[in-house]
Length: 387
Ligand SMILES: *Cc1c(COP(=O)(O)O)cnc(C)c1O
Image (cartoon, rainbow, N blue to C red; front, side):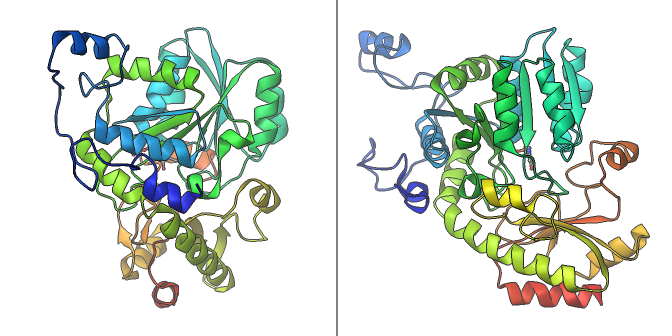
């Protein structure tokens, strides 16, 4: 099946166990069986089935199957949020004394895991500028347990060459984990570019409507099972109601992302031509320093972009944001409606101003997550606010 078909049908082929035509929310903690022997068979893994929803749940399984098929993976599992997916993956795969190599520009919450919590557990983390791939390759070659990547990055849309860094990691026997939230599986499949595990915040594009938190990972059965076994005990299970909303969102993922790709490119071109705009960060623009790498590893350039306006006083940014009508001023991205904000109050609110500056994120940057609206309306709205 192709992606738009997967979104609609994966995990939902054939009649439902409960006779309903569409996915049900199985709001149940436990599952009962007609006999103790059948219960034991399921509990001991001799027959498929569910025992307790912290471990597995039928509604949650449908969401997982959609992610698995979209990433063309052997296995997938889910979590209560994107951060739960990331922290459980790192918690399951790392041991005291391990070394992790990553980039300075990971998602703000991930950055805090790297700078605050993993070091507390005796895990050394080295972070490099994503634009300095030579330093990254040299750091990986010195030997490490895990390489953690994100491309495009949030919020400055930096691109790393996923295949090149995965090859470097595999030379030293390291695992590669890639956060694919910003790209979405519609635009990029890191597992096909050498990554061992792909991580998603389903709260963003996958769900797409800003009404459910969730996370997922996909990869080999062996690796996904290791992380799943940790999550079962750690307890960061996805709620069936959230899984229902996320599965509903995925049914239109391909349609939404195709529109968002188109809208974002048109908005980026418009912004680049406007005299009040200083810099535009979007991998689909020829002016992006890694446009060629992006074009090689992505099928579309995604729905998120960022830019700085020429008035560098932060008052200028807030005045501009207040004049936008067709953009929710709220944290998050990847939803049907356009959202705008500054990283200081959204993706990198966990970081200090000094840390943001070190990551090359000016406090005057505007992150603009493009929705599925008519792009002419968005451009008119931007034009008015900029003028
Ligand atoms: C939002 C986000 C996360 C965290 O996801 P939550 O669902 O909010 O926990 C991780 N990575 C990226 C790139 C994100 O945008």
